[in-house]
Image 1: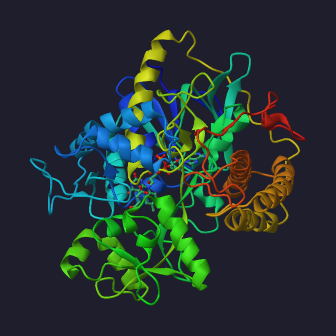
Image 2 (image 1 turned 45 degrees about the vertical axis):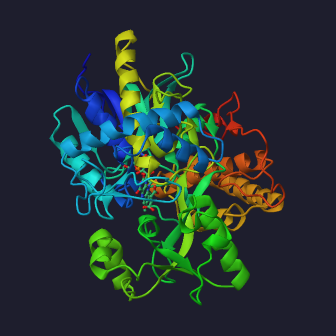
Image 3 (image 1 turned 180 degrees about the vertical axis):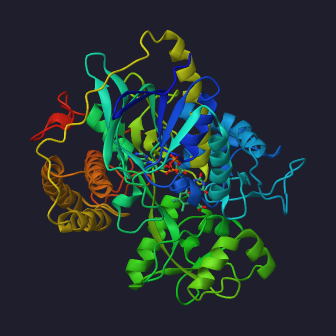
Length: 550
Ligand code: FAD
Ligand code: SIN
């Protein structure tokens, strides 16, 4: 079935499928859906801006005949500390390879130099927690190359309309039918809110690592999809498991920049300032232990020695090899005066990946009819308590495929194709006199999360964090309902909400597991259980002074 994109009201648009997000998950599903339907794809800033474009290491898949699906499943489950959903793991491990071949057809030039698997033309690198070389990559800029290829395809497709600088605010709901009918969207260029209605809506909005002061993520990772789904009444899970990447470039005056785990995969060693390697004291897998273990070890060494960073050393490898495999990192380090072919790189852990998110089934379906969630915003059960390196891009690709199949099936069963939405209500809204409150609250929430909900937690720190975050939330909600919208304000509202959900999940977990380490509960429970949060019956969207849609 195909209905054309039509204008019903000056600020209303309708389409078949609304995809919110233009990362690997959003663009992949858009291309599949566009074979039969009209698709609108939103990006809240530039189309390429999102974590996908920054991905370095690569995509995990079983591509070497000497590797096996079983081994990929086992590695994912070991890294996930017993909490992975075995069906989600099996489905990703089984289908990742065919989606990668599709990327090759779209023109992604995966690295061939040093190809190391039998009868396979591409180089496979290794990362922490993998028992086999299974990470296909484009040097150290895999994400950028994949994003460019997908964007090229999408831009040429007659059934896809790409809307950059369009930020979704909240989902449009039919409460009686428990159905999502699209989203209210801020057109940032016009500063105008549109009601975009659709038969199906896909949240592909990425993660929430910007909740932390130091992060490897771009500015887009503010948890918007998680917050929108929660406000709409969807359950969320496992948000206590925010992954800290062990090695981000440490430079007091520079923004965090990731140093890919593939550097350790190709022989890089973590050292103390005096040159002593330390990872073997923590785990027999040493520098290639899963991320939760390496990040915690670095944190402990930094605290023990009172140092600002540790050092990553790959200078023993030939300079030619380093420049060929890590050209982006080499250039970036050079910019801040470090020659990684000759000296160590100063590194610290930083918030990197949101393992939890909106609960979905194996088709990407959420608790709301018509609403799907895929990519980092979703909690499919794949990552458990700690994501295995390079499984995220694979998850984005595979769940785009599964959600596409499910939407395709559901289209034929859908009785109604046109949905009406009430226009956005701006009565009683004024321009803010000053913006200091928004910028102050941004800093505060991120610092609170870094200081109290970081790599090592305690009950006291979590309690303190929740108190501060709730105070901030009340202030922000009041401000939100009285003032003209801006993307800054919308992101702050979402980020603070997701920060609260992260703390609530952390408080519910009375053990330490994977990425969640609480000094008050250092033991791991015998049985692994997900932390599930359910919104109250009366959704928080209508809790406050005034709701926007009349
Ligand atoms: P994203 O790529 O983050 O895209 C989110 C999209 O949603 C953006 O287009 C954004 O504009 C849009 N959006 C968000 N909110 C709204 C809103 N309210 N309205 C409209 N649009 C919105 N994973 C791997 O598997 N391998 C790697 O090598 C790897 N390296 C990484 C390196 C870095 C530095 C980082 C940050 C992450 C890395 N990851 C890696 C993780 C991986 O890149 C991400 O998990 C993955 O790209 C997420 O894809 P996504 O499509 O879910 O979201
Ligand atoms: C990296 O290249 O180290 C990041 C890989 C990932 O996050 O999966």
